[in-house]
Length: 249
Ligand SMILES: NC(=O)c1ccc[n+]([C@@H]2O[C@H](COP(=O)([O-])OP(=O)(O)OC[C@H]3O[C@@H](n4cnc5c(N)ncnc54)[C@H](OP(=O)(O)O)[C@@H]3O)[C@@H](O)[C@H]2O)c1
Image (cartoon, rainbow, N blue to C red; front, top):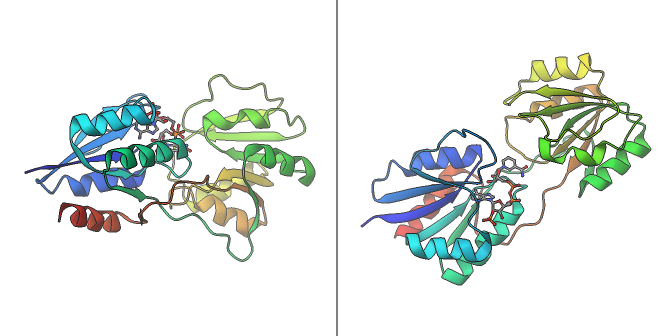
């Protein structure tokens, strides 16, 4: 008999986990993507795209599809989906695992300012005298910074903000990670960056900007991860696979 698993994805870890899970022919692997990107890369297994319609919608989906386990492998900052999954799985009695890459941790020589939201990040920029800022916060989250007229922003994103908020001085750099250390060094130097604003996404693909910042004594305004429900946690694909083995018995 096959066991149906729902994998809430959109992350590197989710793609890797799907790849491993489909090797087991006793599993039916259903991936779920939010649908934010047009033409997303499709993971291994089956894929559905788009929201479920809140907690109730997800609970209905779990019942209808006979889902036996859910793995929430969404991005650390996609917390709404995490809370919805926790509530829907609780009400349908379906086991739920959180797969999450570890957060970045400041090392000696780092100049990090931790903030809980973008409002606090704006305050840091105002009081610290930043002039050339690399904004790597995601295209949908740049708007709170547009009020800072004295700063020249370099906005790095995969696709352009739409609409583009009315920045007085901003350059858009469209590129997708991973970014290597040498190119991060060149970028910071070429734009005379004195501050980086980013989220604590963790992982390797975008971590080298932090190394380059450390080397140069550049300030990093780091947004902390939002709270998520308390759940069984895997920090690697191997741990998630072991959990699936346990569920199947
Ligand atoms: N936030 C980030 O910084 C970030 C970065 C990289 C990738 N992502 C990926 O982009 C997706 C959306 O992120 P977000 O921050 O907008 O999420 P979010 O705020 O946690 O979720 C908002 C709504 O989007 C839908 N949704 C989110 N993830 C979904 C999934 N995997 N499958 C089906 N529906 C999903 C749900 O709609 P319903 O309530 O209708 O079910 C959810 O309530 C996530 O899957 C995440 O892994 C996010």
